[in-house]
Length: 192
View 1 (tube, rainbow, N blue to C red):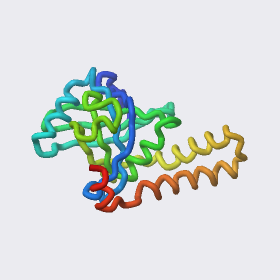
View 2 (cartoon, rainbow, N blue to C red; view 1 turned 90 degrees about the vertical axis):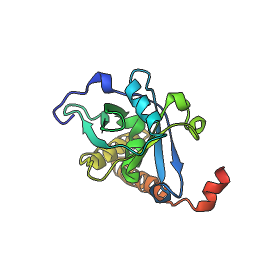
View 3 (cartoon, one colour; view 1 turned 180 degrees about the horizontal axis):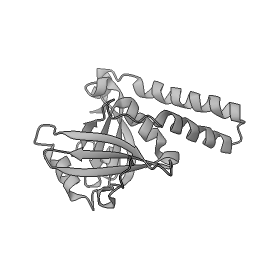
View 4 (cartoon, rainbow, N blue to C red; view 1 turned 30 degrees about the horizontal axis):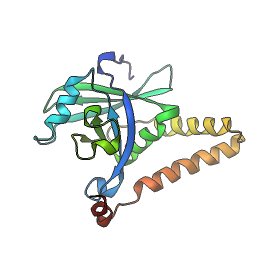
């Protein structure tokens, strides 16, 4: 990952995921929610709980990948306050590529510890944080990497190379269309 090794102690596994859309957050766009296992990373869980009563802290987001394998990509998070800690979230490109694409499109991600619920729906009113993943957290290899992964998946389903290319482009366009639809205020009220 950018010439550095991933510290296994910083790795936080995703146990579930989903999306939340709210008109007051990210202009109503759908924002991915990662339910993460903080059992071995108590500092991250402490940070999430500390955000409940404190102003948002500082975090630096960095995307990374291995030079030798593009099967897994990483989102490295370096928190400066209210608790100084470092976390690395791995994403299996073939199974979780849609999450990476969604985080990049929304430029944000929610982190919900399993102590707030093992599913997104269980943690709606429980501690979680939203992180801005700014455009400056560039990920130059991602568009090509994801498109190729989708093409491979469509080819394995029997599509010809040219058909798989078109299907991958349509897949990405549809994902962006769904994610960028704005959630009107009345939708939010109907959820409560």
